[in-house]
Amino acid sequence: MNAFLIDTLAAQGWLDEEKMSALRQAVEADSGLSVVDFLRENGWLGEEHLAWLQSQAEPSAEQAGGNDESVIGVVQEGNDGADDARAKGLLPPEVEAGVVLGEDGALRGLNDYLKLGRFYGASDVHVGVYSPPVMRRFGTLVPMWPNAPMLTPAQTERLLLAILTENQKKQLKSRGDVDFCYFSSEQGRFRASVVTQRLGIDGVFRVIDSRVKTMEELGLPEHLKGLTQYNNGLVLITGPGGCGKSTTMAAFIEEVNSTRHDHIITIEDPIEFVFASKHCHITQREVHSHTESFSRALRAALREDPDIIMVGEMRDLETVSLAIRAAETGHLVFATLHTRNAARTLDRVLDVFPVEQQPQIRTMVAGSLRGVVSQQLIPRLDGRGQAMALEILINTRAVEPLIRDAKTFMLPGVMQTGKKVGCRVMDDSLLELVRKGIIAPKEAFERAENKVMFREFLQ
Image (cartoon, rainbow, N blue to C red; front, side, top):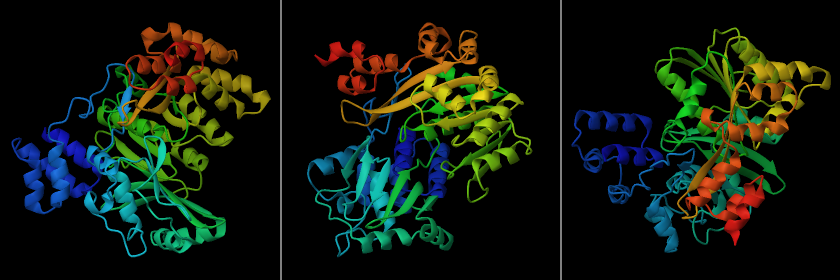
């Protein structure tokens, strides 16, 4: 139970890393310790927070984050107390999360909005001109509290400029946008984008978990750990924006960090998850802060004795070319792409090259590719979060010639027959979620490639 309460507390982001570490050490030293009493004695949380935490002490198996035995990961389960407050039409900032509205109807500072977003289990917090503060929760944009007033240009400017450094303010003024990672000792890390638009200044903040989740916690199938055990090759993690690619990528890197003794270099824009070196030496570099571009950092990484290289996103021809070269020359490369399935992922990788180079690149990719993991997050039917659907391509002797001979359209058929080695097409994952009653048939139908197989569930 202590482990569950600590994980629940970590997910809320109410304590900084130092206090969370002290709490874990205290529990390890005394397994019978009451987490709530320990927090109360140290004065680290108010009574409202402690009461909510105590209410979580006897969760159901589903609330405790149990994973299905399949490739379905259940994530972002949310906060029951927050849901209850919203259902009653209360103003949860004052009652539940410990933040207070100012005289102008807005929260006092940006950290209060971020605190409320993390409290609700939101993936993103939006602060925009002539819009009420909203958050993306389980894939849908909703107001942060009932009858929230619209923010004025002066309010968004005050909220957003207060967190920018002088260099970031200069970039915002000269370019009109700035992307960065915002860290608050109280609220944790957020991937931030601040832009100027016709009406003023807007900001969007992606909530980053304070702790890197393991592959088991994400519900990823056990055989995917095999992709972390290669000494070289290319592993691609793909999906639409906001589907959790960064979280999955971090879980892969954490698995390497826990089981191998290697040098890991990550190249990100911006750095999201902060890794603590376990068995591996980890170097994290941020584009624009520590290096000029992905391609420049990747070129430098090849001279830094890496074993594993993580590329936050393969955006251009040079970055893709360098990643493939690194995979071919004795490095294990993890990278992300914004594509919806395995076949389109490979076409996207190859299409960035000039036509005359594509035959050679196809041969290189066919030999170096280890696997493709494509994922989607879908609202759960019970409203308690989102479920992960996965498509998995493992490179086998049957897959390699299809890539080399430009027959990627045949990959779904080979994946259907490759289930013994871990392959799975997205439609099968969606079908499993529907049959288990986890997602609505309509949600699966809208995302399916073969829609015929889902029509019987819509009747």
